[in-house]
Length: 220
Ligand code: PCA
Image 1 (spheres, rainbow, N blue to C red):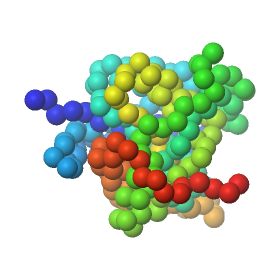
Image 2 (cartoon, rainbow, N blue to C red; image 1 turned 90 degrees about the vertical axis):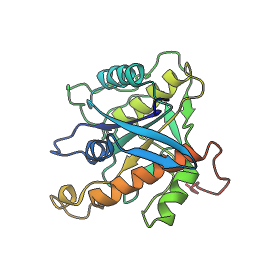
Image 3 (cartoon, rainbow, N blue to C red; image 1 turned 45 degrees about the vertical axis):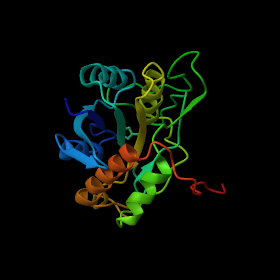
């Protein structure tokens, strides 16, 4: 039997950066076979353009080509100090900066007429618990923002409505130390630790079809 596929996406650099940890992590895990609880799955990495619309077209092409059983999209979140599985994608594009094609939509729906939001169908609490147990800083995030990452997350969850049984979600990752070293006061984590965190998150997602019932919220 053919080994099932996990689709792992990252983004090209944006906002004047030369690197994007999400692409580097995805490429580092490309081809790896994840094994847990008698299951196995092969990681296929795809790097998406940081462009509204085009990013979703590239994602949909990858979904058609690879027919994954699980999808995790990654993106860089400057200012965060932990790996953060996202809880919810909202139907809003509201760009504070231009995307890599120069577009800056304001208060546009990702999918006209689509629902206000979709929840991740990955076990975000189990993913956080697995990372923390291995010494990788992690927390649930309650917002993926309103830029290209949220756009891809929403578009992914909208498309997966047509693929019952395929689970998907999004995780933001911190800057790399070499990015943080170009300014002052920005948190970062090394690539090797981030890559191991994403590998553990994928294993947790494969093995937990039900999420843990533990608190992962915030007060405000
Ligand atoms: N982060 C951006 C878009 C691409 C990326 O890596 C975001 O959080 O929307």
